Length: 239
Image (cartoon, rainbow, N blue to C red):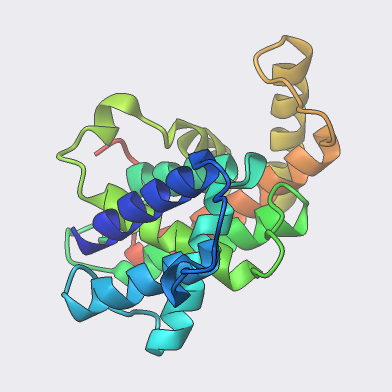
């Protein structure tokens, strides 16, 4: 898969750059070895030229090279990278790019990813590295989700989307004749998360609060509902 190959090699380039000892002399450096950014930009250009990957999201080659470096920067973060991969795997598992009848609907999944990433970023769960933007985080997550969509049904065993299905259960319970009582959803999620935290099932990381986590869960509930309407689903099933 082109996306998977691109991410794999970018990870390799990043790790190699971080692990390499400082060069004693750069007098003979070429453009491609002048910096980490130059190295990634050269790789991306060569990858496109040899059909290892293709530009996407309407980007020019120069924009795609910049995105490649943004990915390298994201991979060097800790919290942001983990949150984005977690969200991507959850969406790939619980919110596939198909309608309820099995017909394709990539737009519905893409919208779910961007809504989730935007919510995480607005609450401070992700922070774009210097020189990157929210759009880079969204594109990175879309790439990860796209790669995970092709998983030979392994995600059904690992079930990373279980948290989304739990949130959806509160949306389903609060739905009558197709209408969602969002006040009920919000209060139910708030109570559930409070119980999870007090019982030790969920631990709030430093710098985060229960209020922010609850707000994030409410945003995910909205994204789930939008996805279900678009795909004609009544619930996020395990199938």
